[in-house]
Image (cartoon, rainbow, N blue to C red; front, side):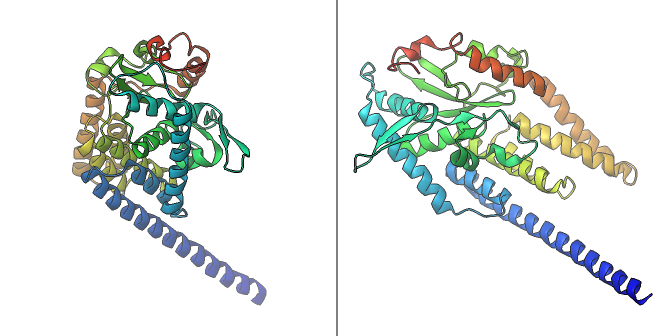
Length: 357
């Protein structure tokens, strides 16, 4: 009897400790995310550093386990290598006023997608391997950190989220001009030069695809392009707004809390600076749907208003031309990106770059 009572008391103490610590952890996570959102809000208002926004978002999910100085140093080292490569490999057949920007963008592309040979001051040769596409969990469904630039930097494997993010970070540090652009479930780089106008840089396949290739998927209707939700260039503020959406998704993966208002707040701030961010609209609509399911029994009046907001968002998404692309279809599309890259390459860009890209 005494034995059983002793262990019953221990069980109660242990249960209380687990529940208390879990609550503490939850509170700590919520506090970290609130602080991070405040920092991102300041950045987007000031049209600040995209690099800083990416770091803050990823570091928050990783429980503030990284140092920004280390991240900055890593990026700075990569930029130094790219500048050295550019000096050693000038584009001799492009001589227009924007040649510096064109060369800088091509150097970043080449560094990310090809092996770079580096000879040290001591005449030792090092090889920096290319950054490749990781076909495992490319939506971050199993582990949200697979979407991170920090993961890409440490493994040299990334996806259509981290690769274009890193490209833009390097371009910003380099002083080069480029833009993030969106397609269904996809991010790529949009560039412009005086000789050929707009052209696309695709880091999944390491190519320069024409617009027709991007439009080839049945999930990119002309209506969506005309309404500006896809294939349009994102400003720096809009790019930071994407980071705010990333913060919301990280919070969703970490705590699965849709009812405390944090995800909705992130979506609203993101949409304030990027009104056509359909992924923010979708996450907000799905969050409202979860809240509605919880409230409809006990608070009918509140639930009715929530349902109205949710319905408006879904209708707006449909009117804008948004169509959800099934994961299996996206996987098939990714394979075709690699296999058919020559078929859809922009031949005008290739005229100005040496050797095989």
